[in-house]
Length: 265
Image (cartoon, rainbow, N blue to C red; front, side, top):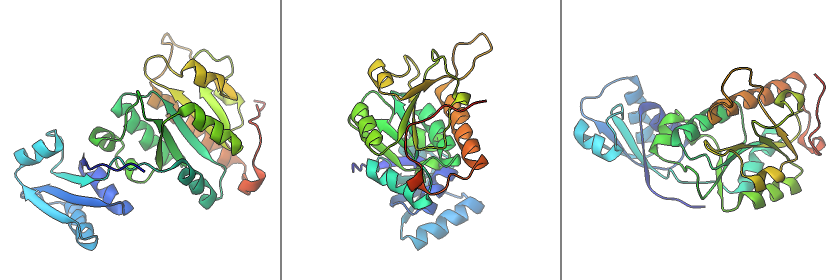
């Protein structure tokens, strides 16, 4: 696991880091800042023995790297990534079939933050990022995720292709999302163990990764634009998975293995 000191800023991201119990090294607060969220920050910091440093807003802006810090920033291990096996443990603990997102070259940190926020809200068991040519965890990601980064398991892997092979060994179906796919996402049954691959802002999913997918689906487009923002696409398909799994009780995870099947609509 790789860990580096990083700054996260904003009321909700800092609060969620403290609430999650993840290690926080130090918290910086603007002088004369007083509100309910600030009171909770003080309380949680005392309970977790996290040091508090008060300073003028200009000094806080330098630490946060922005003036949009809402009067608070925290030094955390923001680049703490889970191992892939740890993500599998999450689904087993919840007694649910695994549900992951694999991000292929998503480079915009705001898109990544939005994806993490939606994934956490939809009950995704983890998000998998490649180390190269992709956004990593950062202050902007933490801010955009509105604190979801503190709760959602995130893995960073050297080779996305090998990771897909490993997931397949665990009987997890791989579904790619591509605008050119003929099959609609509404035709798929997502109640089985599944990992959904989404591509970056430019070229989408790389060809070699696309070839490894058990199925490739698209979002129906009825307007003039050819595709949606990647974070919007993630939101649509994440809640389709949630809808399907809520409609019929999936039962024990041990009985939910095998290839992804198309369903009739």
